[in-house]
Image (cartoon, rainbow, N blue to C red; front, side, top):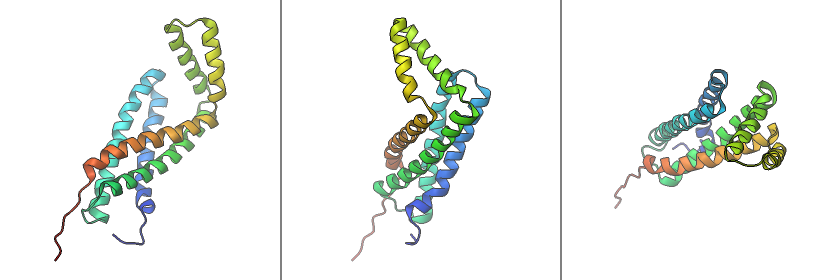
Length: 175
């Protein structure tokens, strides 16, 4: 591996491509699917796409930059850096979505939560108190905060798992 290339630099392009795909899928869902529950179900599909991209880009990193030799730690580090970059980019997208593109989305999320609580047979007072408490946390700024840490958390979980499948340590015998 060329010592002048840091893991951050090498992970930047794959992370930006992965974030772009994630944002594109999110925008398509936002534009084409009205029901929030259906959108959330499709988000699981988005995570499968992201997992595939992690695997693909880490395998390329192993073959092209590390001459086919990748330890578990190196694979995890590469994907963690990707996760960090993806988290930041998607958080910026989340802010634009909630603050400018569709500010009513937060209200729709609150209504969905209230409906779910109603189905659990909670009283009107309990539902009202819960929604009031959620309102303080459901602002565009707080949604960005959740987006960063949620994406980083799930990206790290994916990295831990996928690093098992991408590691390849070549054993050489030296005299």
